[in-house]
Amino acid sequence: MRGMQQLERNVLVAGCAPLLANLAHRVGEGSGNARATWIPASSHRALDLLAAGMVHIAGLHLSGGESSEANVRAVRRRFPGRRMLVVNLTRWRQGFVVAASNPLDIRDAADLLRPGVRVVGREPGTGADDLFARLLAGKGSGQPDYAGPVAEGHLDVARRVHCGAADTGVAIESAALAWGLGFVPLVEERFDLVIPADIAEAPPVSRFLETLDDPGFRTEAASLPGYDTSISGHASTLEAGGARP
Image (cartoon, rainbow, N blue to C red):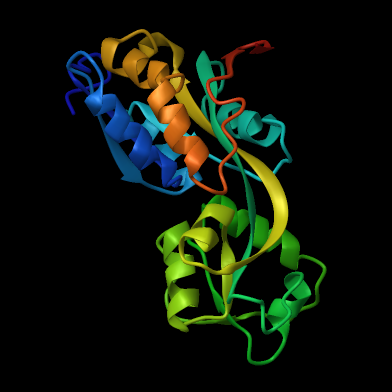
């Protein structure tokens, strides 16, 4: 990419939400010449790419309940004093992906420390890994039995549990449902899109944001289990002095 000032036709968005693939496809189907490319990345990696000028939009989810507070704090730390937009894409539940009917009766983080329970780890810097670390805090000095390398994303966690390579791992509900697996909900989260305010009006970026309200995308997203897009498109502007709805 030749810098954030030369957006031309393509907008690059980094994040871990599989729904971004659907959104990028819809952008390309719409009117005009805008195109969107999804780059799978953890929340912290997506912010790093945005700060380096390698993508136009970063997606992130950090466990802070249904409000955007945790996400906003992360953006403020990463872009101090810079004017940024935070736009909601979806809300979802994150928890333990387990085999159908949950044969090991996994209910909380302490159960992952039991002998014989094989856990899929998540890449450091992901919202899932941050959540898992908090859940394990105070559960003693034991460590889970990690099965194989860290997962490449939410769907990879579900794939490994489905194939029997692991018993559980932290991922979003839609990933478990996509593979016909069980799910133990732990937290509800917002997945937000972060955009520098000075490029938000550029044609490819504005087209990307407009697609959030596209009836076709809304219908498609509503048909996918595990996603709540009822506040999709809701935006806040982060100024040096605070957030403005």
